[in-house]
Image (cartoon, rainbow, N blue to C red):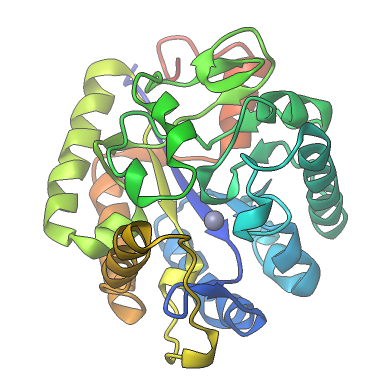
Length: 318
Ligand SMILES: [Zn+2]
């Protein structure tokens, strides 16, 4: 029997305008009308079943954005309620995390009619309370840990992300007070791909050439060690937006972090944004499609591995 190679394409759906460095309903509308249809067409073409992490906010504002994925057997996951930096999960108290999760889960379940069990934290920011808050609100899967990712100091919440340095690269049940460590909680952690440099949409746009090397590494690691790749893409990477100077806001608190975390990051994040990102992303899907990977949702994987106890000799799950 040939061994099945799984692959998770995951999507974070939010109102973030990458060009204007802010959250905007106008962007949300473009994500609904332009970004999502492009993404769904690509997935349809290559028979990809995929997990979409929606913020509760975008779902509440544009319920159609959730409904449009349902007929294709994709999974509805939760990306918190809002993407505002002051509501990141590493700065919220336990109670606030529970409130945000409950609110967002309720909105998404009401619109979709699906039980929502998968979570990804906005900006991948979590803290010691997040695993407990997830368990408390009925979540079963988290995908917010990016082991061995080297660009953490370009991102917000960097200190807590130091936990990623020696986190496991394979799926594991997390510790009750730390999603980056194995333990006895009921939360299954599905780590995001990285080889110091992350294999994700943002980096795919920054350097398509290095990304070609990364995906070969991903394929190699999967064959070698039963790894399951997790790729992150955002439908707002496919939309074209005008620069709106009235909306441009500086987020960093001091000059040094402004120069590194805001200015440089902003410049890099604009590369290949919009229409150019579409063919780059299709190229990633094609690479794994041609190598007979099976593209499934996190929930489907959970059902195979945890509920049914795995498919012996058939899967690359751990
Ligand atoms: Zn996000």
